[in-house]
Length: 174
Image (cartoon, rainbow, N blue to C red; front, side):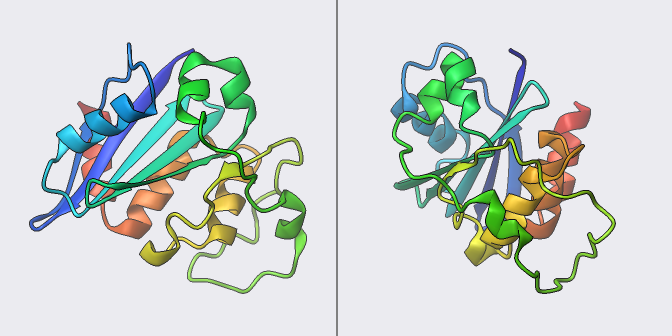
């Protein structure tokens, strides 16, 4: 399974981005340590793990301590050792995708021309992990559930919203 892991951290001097190697990680604590080591003084660190153009895991670390995890589809844990490792402590399903059919409040992004959410996806974890940064749970689930939207597209859109899109784009170009 091919994966790309990007650590994005916000510190006193703004955002930084670096690729994180997850090969050989024994457990979630080791992944968190690697994320923490990427930018030790960060106020906020995010890890975006994209796997096989199918799955996206977002791990959030606040001030090096509080860990929160979200995954676009629980099947990642069944199909990959890395998925099982990242989602080992995740028990709570995210909001049901059926809730995406509820009338939506317009936001600053006009996405009305996009197809409906993928009914086969089973997102899990903390869907609110980016809400205080401007990406609501509804927006996150919508992005992850859109047919034809790759994990890299979701990561790019989230990073643009957070203000670290340029850093992520530079990282991908290396």
